[in-house]
Amino acid sequence: MPVLISGVLKDGTGTPVQNCTIQLKACRTSTTVVVNTVASENPDDAGRYSMDVEQGQYTVTLLVEGYPPSHAGVITVYDDSKPGTLNDFLGAMTEDDVRPEALRRFEAMVEEVARQASEASRNATAAGQASEQAQTSAGQASESATAAVNAAGAAEASATQAASSAASAESSAGTATTKAGEASASAASADTARTAAAASAAAAKTSETNAATSASTAAASATAASSSASEASTHAAASDTSASLAAQSSTAAGAAATRAEDAAKRAEDIADVISLEDASLTKKGIVKLSSATDSDSEALAATPKAVHAVMDEVQTKAPLDSPALTGTPTAPTPETAAAGIEIATAAFVAAKVAQLVGSAPETLDTLKELADALGNDPNFATTVLNKLAGKQPLDDTLTALSGKSVDGLIEYVGLRETINHAADALLKSQNGGDIPEKPLFVQNIGALPASGTAVAANRLASRGALPALTGATRGSDSGLIMGEVYNNGYPTQYGNILRLTGTGDGEILIGWSGTNGAPAPAYIRSHRDTADAEWSEWAMLYTSLNPPPNSYPVGAAIAWPSDATPAGYA
Image 1 (cartoon, rainbow, N blue to C red):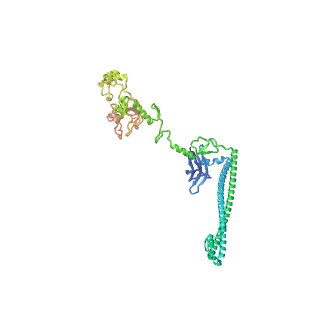
Image 2 (image 1 turned 60 degrees about the horizontal axis):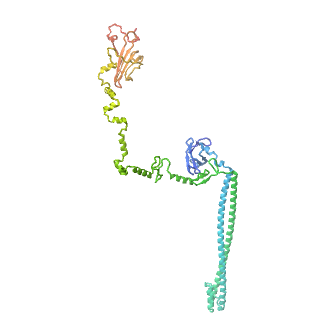
Image 3 (image 1 turned 90 degrees about the vertical axis):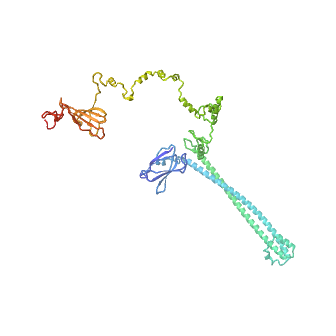
């Protein structure tokens, strides 16, 4: 599970570092991160950074454009690491900090033992090679010595032959001395010269020539013998040198092996002293690696090879939840009586079909006979269900109803009286238009007087003081409403207002007279049915007690329709 590393990147003065990239490079492969992979985080202008880091060990590097990379250190993120800043993880104790000094010495001893063992192996190999070279040189020296002995024998034989030829030449001719220079150019063998000297004692010149040739051959043989002897001596010296090197290499190998044994012994002693233990799930220690894929040990750590093998095997498996199988998967064939969640194999289906066919009557024991009996209907089940949907269940009540007429059915269920009442009922959709005697109906419901008495009507409840409507404003309540006038914009200070709101609007104002018994002024106005129409002016209603002003005789007192006397009047 990733661990949150967040904070503010600051310099030594506490100033946030800008234009800096934090780079995390994996030092080793973990369960979720591959070694050498790199992750980067760019802090904002305030130096804030936030990273979700997987478990593992990382090298932290700070990259600033125009400057070389700066190595900040190494951090280790564990499964149980707490979220913190980059400073917390860089300052946390590492494995090297908590590793005992004795364990470090032990690791150094192990490395030294491995190095010395490798050196001993190399020295042993060199000793073997030197020994082989010494044996080869000894063989070559022996061969050279044999060649030298053979050459010496040949030289001695040639010298004897030359002496015999010289004696024959001295006895054959006295002029052999002057022809000695010519004899040096001949390469004939000493045996040929001796045969020629014995055959012709008179041919002094030829014998002398043969003698000179034999002498030259003897000198060459002596030189070859000397060279062979020198070469044999050289090989013998080389053999001695190789033998000496082999002995030295063997000695060095033995010494290295001794040192390796001593180092291993010291390592064992140190291990015994510090009591190193194998690592477990609850404590640290030495971890052994294993490439086995079937191990259940908690003391061995799986290698990448083992993990790779397991993953390869997992990739060939289908998931338990909704697997998508490919190829030709097999499954056990359940019994034909199975009715659970077993997998129906091809063999199971074939057995069930055979069982169904086998259990059919003799006239329907083949699929063709079954198809013919079902009318060759591929949707036979749907057809049957549709047919059944139009059928009534077998019930005593329904069976009793099935043979009755409409009237009999009405009598059976007791609906005759209800139907008779329904025949005389009024239709709601006629809104009273189907009432046979409407005046009698109105009289029966109390809407008209039955014997000269007044009809009681609902009373209008006062809405209180109603604000005066002006301009194009209309009433918000439909129908007839009543309100009060209390100095709220009407022609009189006090009174009652009746407002009728329908397609158009109308208002009737009945004022209160300021004098007891005086006639009350009445006003009326209206509003058209268009949205932009305005209210008409208030028009006063005149009565016999309140006639128009011009109808009073000259000098007659006119009642003032107000409680307040106008200014300028007594």
